Structure formats: C-alpha cells, structure tokens
Length: 202
Image 1 (cartoon, rainbow, N blue to C red):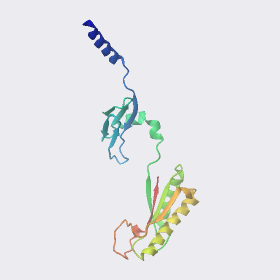
Image 2 (tube, rainbow, N blue to C red):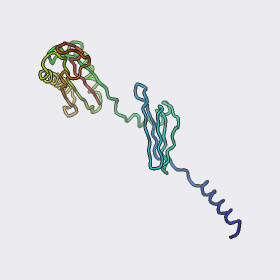
Image 3 (cartoon, one colour):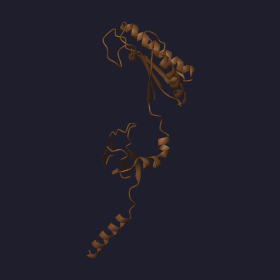
Image 4 (cartoon, one colour):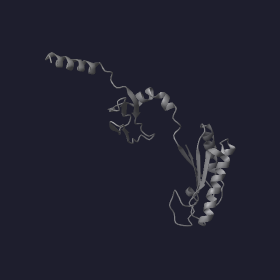
C-alpha cells in the first residue's frame, strides 16, 4: 500500500467528522423553584447518560444521540421569555382554605361566613377545578358522633359550592371527625380551630 494512502484516509475521516452535523437538542429540562422559592432535584436519564439538576433554573439538554448536556445556567427572566407559552398553559397551583364552625353545629362562624363568600367567588372563577372538602371536629363528644358531624359540615360546604355553580362531580367529600386536629388537645376539650372544613383546590 502506498504510504500516502493511510494519511489520506485519516485526513478524509477527520474532514468527515468535522463536517458531520452536531447532534440536535431533542428535549430540554428546566428545574423551576417552588412558589416559595424552594428548589428540589430532578435526574434526567437516557440509555447513554444521566444528569442531576439541583439549582433553580438549571437546564439539561437531551441530544439526539442520547447524550445529556447539563449545568447550563439560566435565569428566571430567560425561562419566562423562552417558555412563556408552556408556563401560561400550566394549571393554577393548588390552594387550600379553612372555614370554621359553631360548636356542635354545621353552621359557619360569622367570620367564616364572610370568608366563605370570597372563597366561592375564587373557586367559580377557576376553569374546571377539582375540589376536596374535608370536615373536622374538636374532641368534645363521642368518636362516632364527631365522624358524622364532620361529614355533615363537609356536605354543607359542598352544597354551598354546588349552589354557587360548581358541579358535584368536581368535588370529593370526606369527614375525619376528631382524628386530625390542627391543635392537639386532651379529650373533651373544645377547641374552635379544630372545628373546621378544609377546602383544597387543584
């Protein structure tokens, strides 16, 4: 073989590699902080590579050849600009409300009556909300009685929300009785903050 042929072959191979198109970015993963600023962690895995993101607005790019390029720093503003349509399509963040009840009744306290009107207005404004309504009691009374009372309170809230225009199918209702107090007390202690219904909207 002529000694120049291997050199020519190597040169052609280098030229081919240099002219070969770079792998395209197939996917991008951006780690966003929670609404309170906390940052979790996400691991991006392909058959060829793995990368872990643990800083706010860190980016991992998954290439068409399966490699992962990570550690690309971004900022809140650049993410908002680049992914504006995606961020706008996100559902609203889950939100929770508490309303409180008169002792031994399924009747809202005066303060909660006014608050409940604001809650209903917000819930009706949300597109197709999923609502979980959970009733609670304090520790005065028998366990079975409080189970029934907590469910009665939750049903009262569901009925009021239904009257405001929210479909029954969008609401899930449960009663927890005295089992999940906000304020821990001894048995037979009347604690107003435990006489509540939690409304969680997703």
